Length: 179
Image (cartoon, rainbow, N blue to C red; front, side):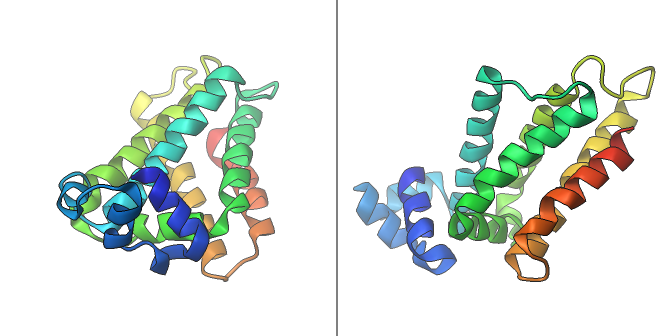
């Protein structure tokens, strides 16, 4: 069902993802689709979760590169951003779902945050910022970086800023927040 959703988003963006069409192409009953994914937003955020899990799997095979923690985080963000910008229609649909304000998808939105927190924390590694710093403060810095990333993506997908503005913003935010 997630692959079908991604394919529909690739073909026509947000508007192309219709629950009935997903069920039909996935060859499942519409009720079955709704049992697992109660809304279009939930379905698209679930696609995003699968993408983030895929990023984590790729990082397990080919870890973040860099001689220091901030460089490794920037490498992770660059890889993720490159994948998102490669398929803008899917990205626009996923981000639109993520920021929809639909409270029924709050658990899925929270899961994206937890996954990104783990990926960034892993990239920081044991020599990251934790040098005696309060772990809650460290998590706050990571969460702020994730928030900057989401805001940069929203600016890009809404046409406020070009796609080329995202990485410089993330690099600067990483340097400011993580050093």
